[in-house]
Amino acid sequence: MTAVSSEGRVIVDSVAGTHALHGPPAFIVRSAVYGAFGPPPDVILSGVNRGLNVGRAVIHSGTVGAALTGGTYGCRSMAVSADVHDGEWDTITPVVEAAVGWLLDAPEAAVLNVNIPHFDGPSPPARATVLSERGTVQGNVTDTAGEMVPVTFDDGRLPAPGTDAAALAEGFVSVSAIRSVVDDDTFDLPELISRYRP
Image 1 (tube, rainbow, N blue to C red):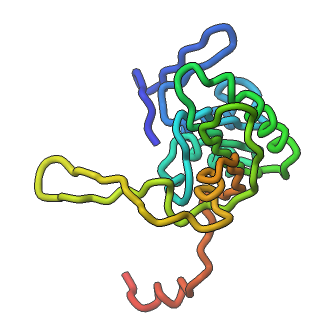
Image 2: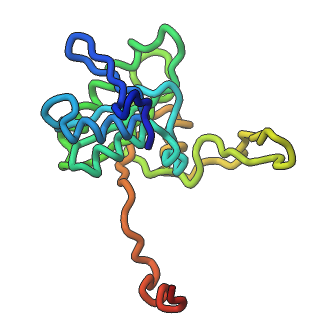
Image 3: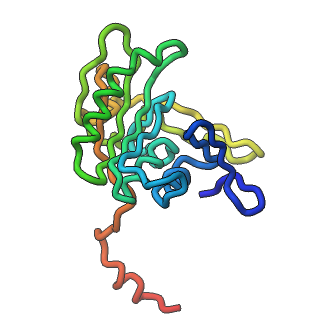
């Protein structure tokens, strides 16, 4: 994590009790939980991100990364992303308000990833989902020969039922409970290390 700094200090703009830190979202959350802006927060709200954050690709999202960082420090945290166009931000307000209620009733350190599809009319209902194996699109490197790395975004497969991508494709708000980095106990690491000694 890096942030914009001047003379060894991270740049912060403060106006009327609101702070803007020049750095990645996860770094900002980490600064907040260490008291950079006053008492540490109880709740982290990240977003609303313009564009969806779906599937295992959320690992690359700054919005979701901020929420995961908050959960790591014991804060109830939520990332909200929406397929929203200019002039439509007010339409998602009821969904975001409901999502804050879900978060406040969630267990301590819970992390929710909420995705709101584009909609006309009343707010769509929500579904509890799991992360899809792939996001709504999957990037594939198509050429590595030149100075540029062109990437295509195309995934013709239908999303698996019960996933965030499937819920969104059906017009539902997707709500996934996710966790940050956890230990991997699926193999014998001490045995693996014993094979080669430094």
